[in-house]
Length: 328
Image (cartoon, rainbow, N blue to C red; front, top):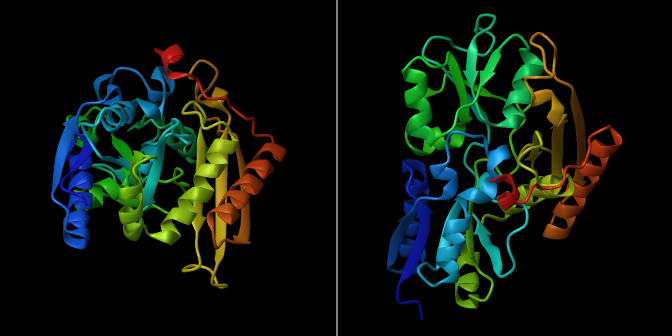
C-alpha cells in the first residue's frame, strides 16, 4: 500500500508546474498523498556554456535520479526532451503522459514572425537543432546563445538583448503565457525535437508497486510517438552536440487507424561553429521520413530505426555521445 509519494523535481516555475500536474493526477486518480522535493540540477547551475559543451541533457536529471536511488524520492517528473535516450541501469520510464503542443514558438516584442525580422536581427536559442533550422530559412540572422529557465529567457528578451527568441510552445502554454507567442512554427517549417511537449515519469526499475499503478496514467499514442522519435536520436548517437529533429504525426492526422508518419532532420555539427560558418550561407540539412503501422513499442522502434537509416544514407553522420564528465 502506498502511504506517501515524494516527487523529485527541478525548481524552475515550469518544472514545478509539471510536478504539480503529476501530483494532482496521483491524488485525484489514485488517492495518494504526494509531496514535492525541489532540487537544483547542474544543468540549472551552469548557464555560461551550452549544453553540448558541458555534458548534455543528462545534467538536468542526474540529481533527481540520485534522490530516487537514495530513497529521498519515489519518482521524478521530466520534460521528455531533456531526458537522455538511454537511462542508467536500474531506472526506467514508468509512463509518458499526454503530449502538450510539441511545436516551437517564435517570441518577440517587436516582430510578428520570423519573416518579419530585419536582416541581421539577433535571435536567441541554445538549441543546435533550432539554430540549424533557423539558419536554413534565414541565413542572414545572428543567432546568439540563450540559457536559463523560461522566465530568465523571457526577461533577457524583454531587456532588449535579443530581437526574438525561440522557445517550446508547450512551456508557455502550461504557464498560461500563450499571449507571449507571436508565431507558432508548424513542423514543416521547424521540426520539433524528439519528445518535445511530453512529460515522462521516471522510477527505479525495482518499484513494481509504482510501475503497476502509474501504467494507468500513460497516454499510449504519445508514448508510441515519442518512442519512435527517441529511437531516431538513439540510433544517431543521442548526442546533445548533434542538431537533430524528429517528430511523428499519428492516426489522428492520417488515414489508416494505426498509421504513424515520422519525419527527421539532421544538420552537420560543423555548420553550427561560427568559425567555419558565414552569414548568408544556408545550413545543409539531411531530411528523412517514413510512414508505417505502429501498434506497439517494437513497431515504434522499428520505424525510428528506418528513418535513422535513411538519414545516414542521405549523408548524416552518427555522432557518439560525449561522456558528461569529459565535457566538464
